[in-house]
Length: 428
Image (cartoon, rainbow, N blue to C red):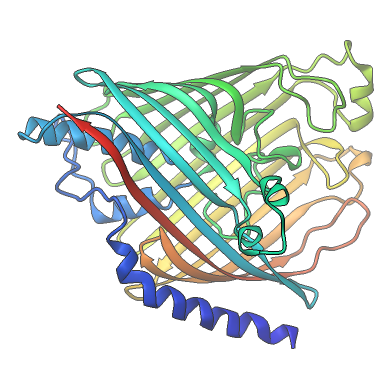
């Protein structure tokens, strides 16, 4: 009976999503092609570029685009918006089956609020808070309010400054390292295991490679390249200090630094490099050697991506030292690689595929047989590009845990449904 649940479950999701697609469409806040004109001859954002922007996990880029569009609208004679806030959410539920044992589970649902206040003609103070929650717990009437509260956690929370060329962010934010890691972090219910974004079984917050904790970031958009060939060059820098080392007991990282640079052509071919460093003082706490640490944590990431009207492809490769851990929490040095690709079969139907590979360097006996190696294949049926969709995929494992056991293949179906609610705004 269990093996039949994914089939009828998917039919239910299709029916529910199909019935509500048109009704919910009116609730979204979107930026049209004509709104997204840019300066100095830069091309207007196309439908394809908007589609891929909407597929990203980091909401900061879309929010900045909306503010840029707002400024363009004001130049065309629209009233100036001075202060306001918007609400958004993403409901994600999936059914996963492994070794004939399946269950419904939450798939990283979240609810957020973003706010901005203009203080110069083209500058804004910005803020965001985003909470993750388990939507299935919310629907479980048998759980008490205290039990549900325990399943809510902070995903993002920061304040900052946004100008036409610079963003300064303080708080918990997607990292400079993730600006490249996001090229392939697009699988639903799989992926993100190979290049150190979510390292050491965390969200990448302590080390600063994922949703960085207590971080100070500066993101620059520089227009020194020929605008007929290139989009503005992106340079991102961040700093942290004193975050706890995963599996390190009471030990903390010292100063942590991240930097990334990204160059994109006008036809959407991108290359970039990112580096993240976190100081580890082994002399101050020799017990850190017991978990495999031999020096400072370092991660170097090189990535590229390109996309067109019916396709997308991204590839990232990482070299890491004292950054990733085995399933038993032992740190190691190694190489990782992740590829993600998609192809549009019809108006709403997409094929997706890719792989994750992570292997320790030779000469590290404490890692045992550990390696990450799997391929992913799946399909997506979309209602609003990748903001709202139903998906199904299989993760075929060829990796090993440290003890030599092999993880079983994983079959997943699910739904992702984004909402955007226009909040209060003051108009000058």
